[in-house]
Image 1 (cartoon, rainbow, N blue to C red):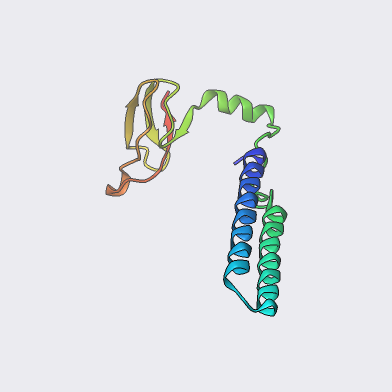
Image 2: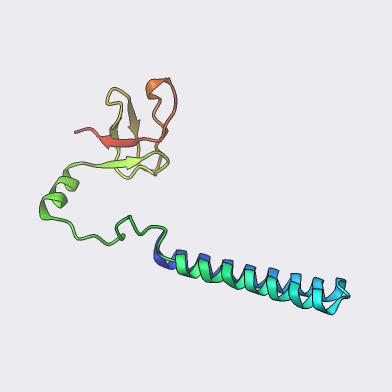
Length: 136
């Protein structure tokens, strides 16, 4: 998930938290008669809700901190190697027609045409998500 999508998700989650907090506060104002209990309950709801919102925003960007950003600087050798080898994952749409083999089970091959989705590999007699490599 890129940063703008993650930020948008956190914004939507924040709005949901605020709406839920407001609804709970309104219910407490309507249902609870004792002013002390009402005050304590409202304060607790606001504190917990605000803490949840703050945690969401503090964690923004840290979920994928171990993974490199989408924009990477590659060595020229890596670029040449990528041009020579075409690979993709299960579920992706085929962009280059040809015969592909599973990276984990080279004996398992599939013939693909542009526009078709890559299937799971049936290696070890069970399906698994695979990296499919175009055979040369």
